[in-house]
Amino acid sequence: MSLAFAQDGAAPEGPGPLVQFFPLILIFVVFYFLLIRPQQQKAKAHRNMLSELKRNDEVVTVGGLYGRIMELGDNVVTLELAQNIRVRVERSKIEAVAEEGGSRKAGGDKKSGRDK
Image (tube, rainbow, N blue to C red; front, side, top):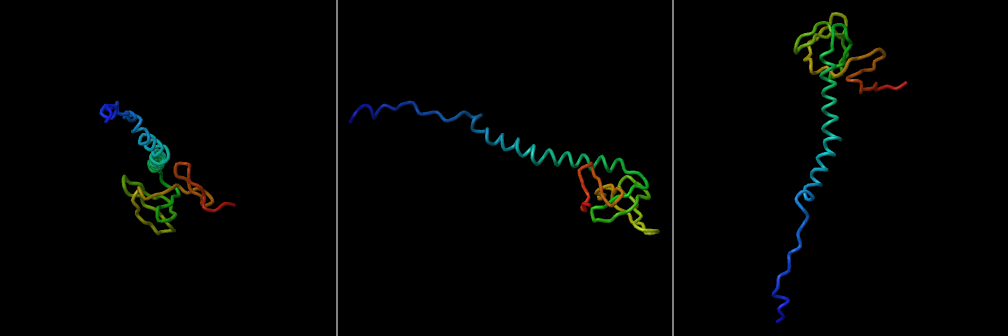
């Protein structure tokens, strides 16, 4: 046998640890900018909308009820759906402030379901 087979050459080194984790880092960055950050901005706009509610605002609930705010509490809002018909709704369940013409606005990014 030849001595060439007995000699062990230097094993080829793999890529460095940073290069191995680069795809994972890239995936996290993409998820942050496409999923996490927009969701945080939407939640912040909703919190701001809820904090700016005032009496006689027309609002839409998560369940789709349109009503006028009659009383505001820390966690509960009393809405008047029709004359002398009032319901109490949890403040966080108000989806948007309704504007004239049936459109609604929550943080400025919602549009009317009906286009004219």
